[in-house]
Figure (cartoon, rainbow, N blue to C red):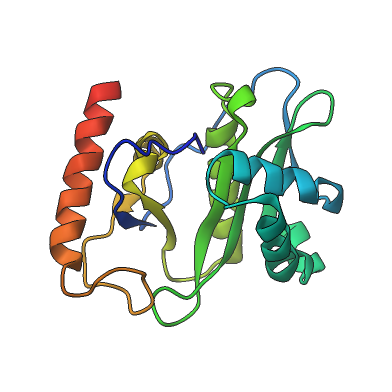
Length: 201
């Protein structure tokens, strides 16, 4: 969402949305709008996530994007959301996508990001609320989840406000962490996150 804060230790964490938020309202700054995915924005999508530090480089990002999303054109049109400005420039992205961290398919929030030149305009909240709305329309039984990291505490503060809660149960079978230290590392991670959120509140 925002550029990662790499000055603090990295720990991966998970969050779940066990109950839908009571209020799903947002206000975008004038000129911005939420649209379904359009393939014309593929390269801009990759550039945005490279700039945010979420992808290593453009070439690897394009390969990933083609394999993961462009290979399923009908699905990506339904399950990926974009925000564009009044000139049609890409400002933010989000999607609801299949995740396998728990050993079976569950729906996850995936690739949320807002261009640093378009931040503080309500884009991240709009994307998350529309993402949650789409998930709710799917009428699946298991909670929506997301993976994130300590370095993304600014985004995590918003996820908490929208009703996502820290996952502190047994380590999911396909989560990339050390099972021997998962419980301890998760506790340390959430203390660090909450301390950083308190600093910026």
